[in-house]
Image 1 (cartoon, rainbow, N blue to C red):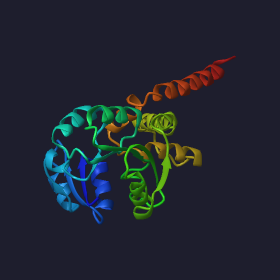
Image 2: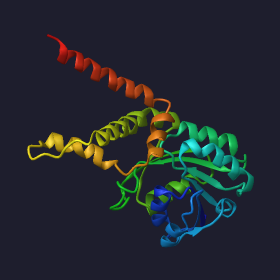
Image 3: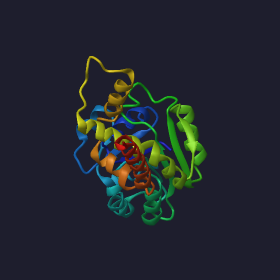
Image 4: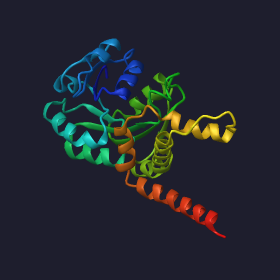
Length: 243
């Protein structure tokens, strides 16, 4: 595989292209004009048809827009391409890819457990979750991820991923968003615990609302995890109010 088409050239698409451009010829498409950002990264910005004529297609659009994108892709894409999504949830994207992609297309589901902020100092030794949905090139892709990019590959079913991600991301992004919105003050008497609490909001501050909504709405287990947390907060508050 020598050509990569990135469908969705937002922050993650731009970020990962910088790591893949040394080994792949990359074309990219986005509904927003990202030609300047593509040129800066040595990527050819073009239309959906030319982008999806590649051997390998990376689907990097928010899950809430994925179905419409796949419907349009299926009309013009290389029918034998290997399609990899990079969504933060896995059950729904896999369902959509199986539903709309040509039967001849190969599918690998992935979730890089990092982004432009957490990977700004390099991605080596960071984690990526993968699942072979239907691909004869799965082992080859794993080799590229581990040996070329230096990632730690964790194999997991889409359902098990979403169960764990409901806590790993569902809770952390939810709490982080709340901390950001509270505008908590920095203070001269801040403790180590308080400083860590502020960091929770700071780490994810550049994540988009689309990503946040994907994590909270599209994961079938996220609402249950949030409610579990709320139940414990309520119990604690009741304990405080006891006389």
